[in-house]
Length: 197
Length: 197
DNA sequence: GTCTATACCTGGATAGAC
DNA sequence: GTCTATCCAGGTATAGAC
Image: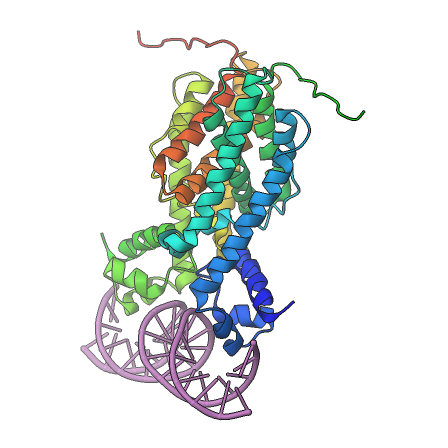
């Protein structure tokens, strides 16, 4: 891995652990093993490097979500799979975390990937729920957009509760609660056509 | 308001806006109108002052929640009232925000009020949901503890989505989604005895 | 109780040598 | 591409005068 790459990855870790304000160029240099000169050769400064790191983390989130939400299974199965994805509850969400960073939110460039990926995720989930409603899998009274927002919010809020409690199981408990709420709106456990012939 | 009081209130505001790492003693002094000497007379330093501010914000949160969750109305009405409480979606939660602050989470003294208030809130909500289950208002299959955790998580996560989008309505949308999910588990719109004779 | 002076460290960045 | 030297502002705190 070359210096540029190590700088981005180290910045991603530090942004995850300490946020934008809490991350100094010096800390990035130490973690990446790159020197002062190297860092300012590859990037114009802290915001520039942070943008590269944030963009990559957002893209990661998008790709992982897409992998679970596309593919086989009923709508509820896919949503469940995504909500239950293995996550490090106590570390929090590397992207959601950035919304608490005043300097990120205030800078349109830095905030852009954050805004985009959560917008995409909510829409993607809403589309999936709408699909479930149309095929009769889900209660017709369920509003896809609102429900999708609620489910994504649970994901983000569960990190908050787990971190406050210093307890990873709290994360899982909240996710289970959300799935329990969703379960009440499942109409028929729709069979998916089996294409393995 | 005396200097000590102004220092605490200014610190609360700054912690809300910028978090612990992002808040400097100098900024606190400027906002409160108190000088360097005054601040270090009343408090041993930044952590000491922050503890006073955090404790007060946590107590505030507790009191506002208790006010909505106690009182008249069915369980669902009370939960709904609390979820729909007027909140400044774009500013985020003054307490939940602190869970993203590494220095707060790492310091047991600073984290204590945060941990306690979210623990209390989740338990309080769980007790209420259990009450609703017992009196037949809510579906018996709903797990009170998990559902409570999910509802509190939605509250916290909705801030994240709203801040990411720079849009307060996103907050409301997610809350509506959660209430919609809960609605599917309401059995009978239980009449509450009217004591106004 | 509050003020001013002082101290030392870190944050974020530039300049020029290699 | 990377290194070292250097810079200035700000963060956090102490000391002692008033």
